[in-house]
Image 1 (cartoon, rainbow, N blue to C red):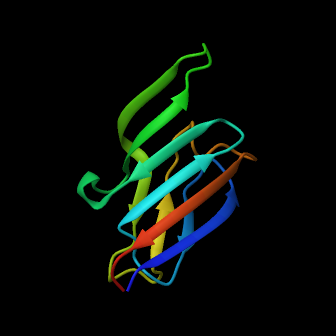
Image 2: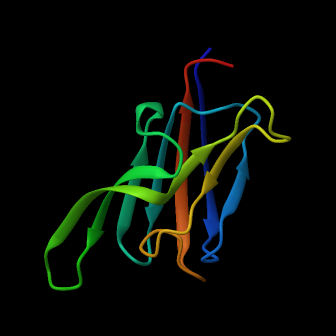
Length: 106
């Protein structure tokens, strides 16, 4: 069964737990105030993601981050969903983060 969940959360600068009721195998985050996007797939691993952000100089930076990205829950966690890490372009205090999470399994 395919599952798709969308939502919005305000950035805190600290890790944010998003409960979905399922474990996603794709997550996309949009910081709509800071103009940054982060995509995560399972082959990237915990805390990672492909980040696209406005560099502030009119250019676009694209990088594979190794920490501060997305971490999905495991079967031993108390919740089923993902965590938004502390990346300073994505999770900024009082900036809006929209997210899309997708799973092709329960």
